[in-house]
Image 1 (spheres, helix red, strand yellow):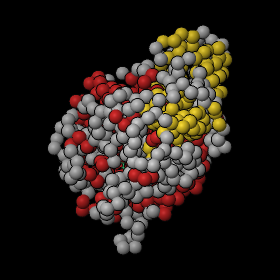
Image 2 (cartoon, rainbow, N blue to C red):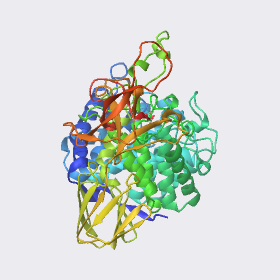
Image 3 (cartoon, protein in one colour):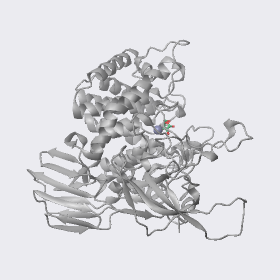
Image 4 (cartoon, rainbow, N blue to C red):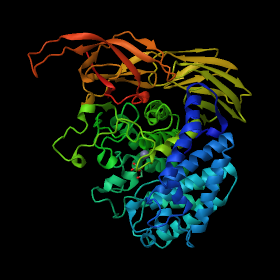
Amino acid sequence: MQKVKNIQFKNVDIEGGFWKQRYDLNRFVSIDSVYNRFEDTGRNDALRFNYEKGKSKPLHIYYDSDVAKWIEAVSYLIEKNGGYEKEQAEIDKMVDAMAEHQLDNGYLNSYYIQVEPDKIFTDRTCHELYCAGHLAEAAIAYDRATGKHKFLEIVEKYMDCIEKTFIKDRSARFSTPGHEELEIALIKLYDYTGNKKYLDMAMFFIDTRGTLEEQEYEFAEHNYAQSAVPVRDLDMAEGHAVRAVYLYIAMSEAAIKTGDKNLLNACERLFNNIVNKRMYVTGGIGSAKLGETFTVDYDLPNLEAYSESCAAIGLSLFALSMQQSGLNAAYADVIEKIMYNNMLSSTSLDGKAFFYENPLEFHLASVDKETSVKPQFRSHLPIRHRLEVFACSCCPPNVNRIFARIGDFFFSEYGDSLVINQYGAVSLKNEKINLRMKTDYPINGKVKFTLKDNKYSKVILRKPSWCDQFTVDGAKYQLKGEYIQVEPNMEFSVDFKMKPYFIQANPMVRADNGKVALMYGPTVYCLERIDNPYELNALSVRLKTKFKKIKNPNYLLPDLETVGFSDEAFDSLYRKANNDKNPVKLHFCPYWTFANREECDMIIWIRKL
Ligand code: FUB
Ligand code: ZN
């Protein structure tokens, strides 16, 4: 079933340009920022097992997952770059504490062991199996990066406990994880250790989901945690967006490993439902804050968009997994959309602060507009600036993890061909090739390839879906669907012609009716009021308009300027309609750079004239 093999970051060097800057920001700034805030908030202490009732900061049920994700990110950086001695010493201390406090039966969770030992495995909504999954992912990454086995041994002992409790004895008060994640980790454990037991455990949890009555939150229906029907019957992305995509990653990985066609079909249906009806133009998912959920097809409100950083990251990993099922550019295309938009917007330009939600519009006057209602009952709108840590700080270490492994997205193998899925100034060195891409992508679409020691018969380039025009120089090629098949020479180049363009949404998307969004290559642009001192929703633009590129000292992509129109202002509340508008300069910036200055209104979708 695995037709395409993704090439992992270990063989990929991020050498320069856009991605080097972004990789280094994570490596040298965000990793420390997250660690320091986890230190201040007592998260790291949770895994040091030094909690003292009444003295320590209160523990949270999923602190283990936050710290584990950070350990996993650091492990990827160690695996690729070596070093991190100080961090390794800290992690080793935590591992020692875990070993010391792990229960005799293998159970390991810092909250339940230290705070509520009598409640172990009694409440499905309390994230124990989610934390177990993140600990396992961290342990695998740390083992591979350092060759130190203690953490993985602890985790394997914990997995024995989970197998006994949930599969052999069925003695827990619930049957499947309330928040998916463990399933992904079990498949990774199977890959890493070769022990088939872990694949069987993953299949048990995947197959059991939706077949039994399970506990849910009081406010939630069974589809909130994807538990309403067996997973092979799912045909719409529903419920909590992060939970959903984490399940789909595991389903896709399982289908590919086991050859389960029905499972893969379900994944294809879910992927298509998301990208054709439920995904923001930024690659974000999850339209409703309440429950952080998918809602109904084409419901993509901009102002209230929930669009959690973790959800977009999860979708990128679902697409990366599905990419293995066959040569289908749709997967890498969605990854590109996420990489250049929702994934980047997660982080401030200085690398220290993060968005939980990534809305597609800000309107300051709409915040707390229910002035006669107590604040806790007012509508929730996303905050207008990024924070270094939140009460529920799942996104920052997820951002750490994804940028530390960004090299995973660029290349795959298809038979005896090499597939280039993403473009960047990166190189690939393995036993079959030494390939270097020289490019300023996404600043322009020119990519020069240099190949040494090539044993692949073809190099297959994904033609980005935004690209209508391209040229190839220095090699024979054929366009086959969304791929350009190149007879590889030692040097050749491609130019995906990149210029600003507008896109429109399906008319069923009510939030975007009559509006367009500006894009440049894969990058979505937005208007911030700080650059455009008008009521943003009273602005409009003609489709045929000329753009000027403006260099911005704060990032590599250009800002874009054009002439648009602002509705004429008048004093009364209403008047007889006319078409009067004033020409105004519109200054667009890349969406992911928004909210890095003072708080102000922002829109992506602008009225079309
Ligand atoms: O519940 C754990 C994580 O925190 C979820 O994945 C996020 O949506 C946030 O609720
Ligand atoms: Zn999150």
